[in-house]
Length: 103
Image (tube, rainbow, N blue to C red):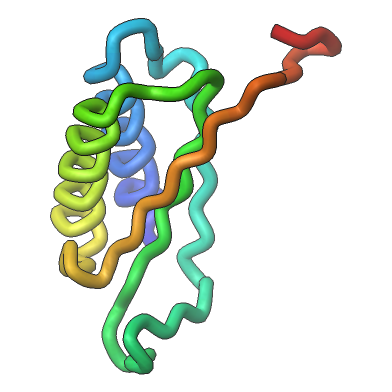
């Protein structure tokens, strides 16, 4: 994957998280494993993606819906992976550490 494509994806993910009140791109850490070997619905011949979003504290149902819609659209647009081959999972984290301290 080209560096420009990665940077565009990172920027878009920061924009998406800011759709949720109280969330800021300034606190987003993004990882990308473009070489992951994924098989979706017993078909590894087509591209697929797994998006994992960890958030401090839970979100409202409508916020999860908005994030899923936006994340799938961004991955489709920037990585050319069809939305029906993208899973998005969410994990609410109660304790989060940073810079030698916990929030």
